[in-house]
Image (tube, rainbow, N blue to C red):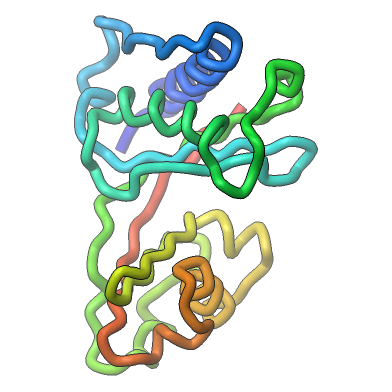
Length: 186
């Protein structure tokens, strides 16, 4: 996992990436002297909030890019590409709060029967990915806590996020992956 100082750096990096892109349409470079641990491939999400409401959230659930590079890319995407929201404007920048989540590699939750998910997944610790065929939905570990969901609500809402029925996690052929995250915010 990464240190608090590295997490603080990533939040500032995300903020800088967003501001530079929105005001100058340029993608920042990763500093050459970035800590080695931030060059390791890790999953990352950037969440933007405005007045306590979600304003954008995009990320890489899998470790496909060096962490610092992933944060720059997903920060810009969260501000400009989240299909649920119009792009963030320059006038909004001061009102946006930036949060960076650094993810562990998702691991398949292995069960003999779906009811065991209720015991294997922990609200507040785990993030979830539900996958069935071409459908896939992800919720970060902080989401069920923010919404005060129990494990059943968490599973149902992850299914809904995937575009599936709320009880799809009980069906044959559905895969459930869990991951953890370190969360850093302004």
